Image (tube, rainbow, N blue to C red; front, top):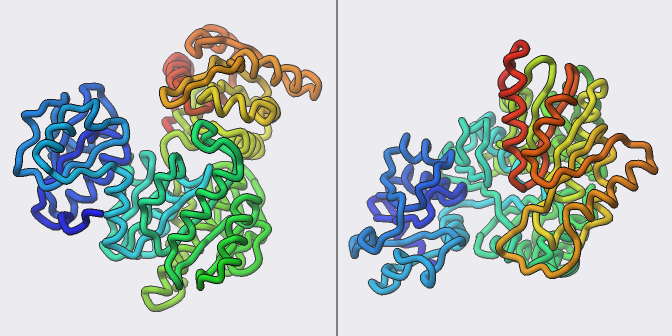
Length: 488
């Protein structure tokens, strides 16, 4: 891969620069002294503000005139190719080296002692937690998250130094195989992305392939509570390739075993065996304690690389950071609170993540009625995991289901649709007496019924990777004139 070009003064052009990951990598390269520019569509994203704040120039169209021989490297979003994008075609004509974002991320990782955070779910929040812990422990790292992190000032990057690199790495289409890790955090492995991985074995094997990129002396930090992650760790251990295997979680042995977890007064309290401290967090869910345990394991490893175990001062700083941690956009994100109604948004789109998220919210707010709007993402995932989806909403007191949010990357010819999921979920919930279930094809058509339904003491959550999230913001705007407003 092309890494020699990544040096101060190099002219790097990004096609699709407004994308979360692409913008984040552009920012890291800009901070390293490279001349960064790019292009994208005119649609406004949160990354527009970041690019403007950094004074990174970018075009809001794609034109061959933007590509000149002075450009040393073109990095492009996976959404584009030379067949469909005039700028990429022009770069090809001029012989300018071009790298897809995931390949460029992999090339960037070769410059550092790098850690890849991966897993079917949990990787985004875990990466953000790692960043918060690195900052608290004063460890010289760069962090790249696959979403806007609230604790990073709404950005996807945190730059604390140039020794270590910690990045969220994605399993879809085996994109993470471009990354060059010395350490890997593995949160969860189970069937997902059925348009590319037809069964569990195929996705498990992809994670095994990724973990086998670890060099001798590398470290695999895995969730002992997850069967798939444990299976991958066992396979890597049996390879006898000199990789250190480090478990974390409630079922783990060793320093990163979670000793206890309890919820009181909308706070989570827990401890980790090898860290002499009790931790407090203000975000719901036992899975968040798992994410913290993974982050603590990595932080301790890097502290040792710096010459010593975490000091008492570092641990106290970490405790303070976790108590104020607010996670990332769309991960149990509180949009706002008004009239004693909490409006929340979460990206959970896999049955396991949905079940875990709703359990966490319900345990955190046991006296509140939980009302959920869920929009499933991709027909292939919904069809393959239909039974699991239908059974994962039992902690919702009221459930609104919508049409499936389709993906352009899939070619689905089956008969499952949003109403199919509704009928199956409604039957299960009626049998178990779990509350009301409604089907409203378009999320926005739920607005009027929800205006009449929501009352003081409720929590309303938009859930999923579809486009139902504006519903929560619209409802919050509607209700906020009725009482005191607490912004998220």
